[in-house]
Image 1 (tube, rainbow, N blue to C red):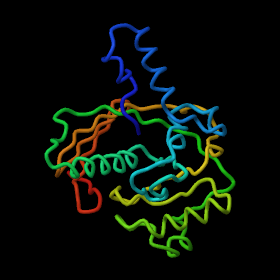
Image 2 (image 1 turned 135 degrees about the vertical axis):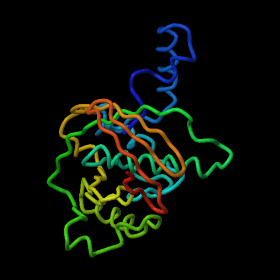
Image 3 (image 1 turned 90 degrees about the vertical axis):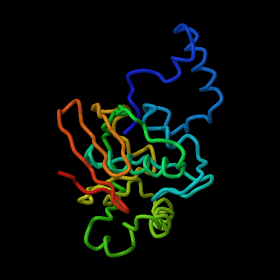
Length: 222
């Protein structure tokens, strides 16, 4: 789930397309190189593997200079829950910054993920093996990710803490797990943020949901 891809955010900084191309080239040159094993992929897939320095940990990626992780979900609404929760945390960390007044447009991109070296934490035997769904403490997940990488694991399937029904997510640990170099298809979504209720709708499928904000995730609202 990424910000709407219908226009470049840097286009408003320049006057002509040629100026825009120069600006984009300058920005690209200032960034770290794309890892060689990811270079054949679309930027929407290799971006999490490019930087390798993170201010805080995520569920399967440690803070600091550590290997990247591409996070996805098996259904778009699950990805919405994960991303919206992160956005609400971002704004909560700056009480003086108001939430966006207008809905924000996002693009849901579908990836084809395949790997013979996957770990499914939703399987009954694995679900009981660690605290994989702690809403705030990622210790067990991070330790598992370290061991999984060392063993050659490419994908970790796990239940979403933020989705009301715990639908499946996927943490992709390596670019080798992308079976196709570019997104299979895309959907357009709009999200209206509020501290108590998040409203989201999919322009592509003409569907909509309301998500009540809880202490650790969302609940479906009527």
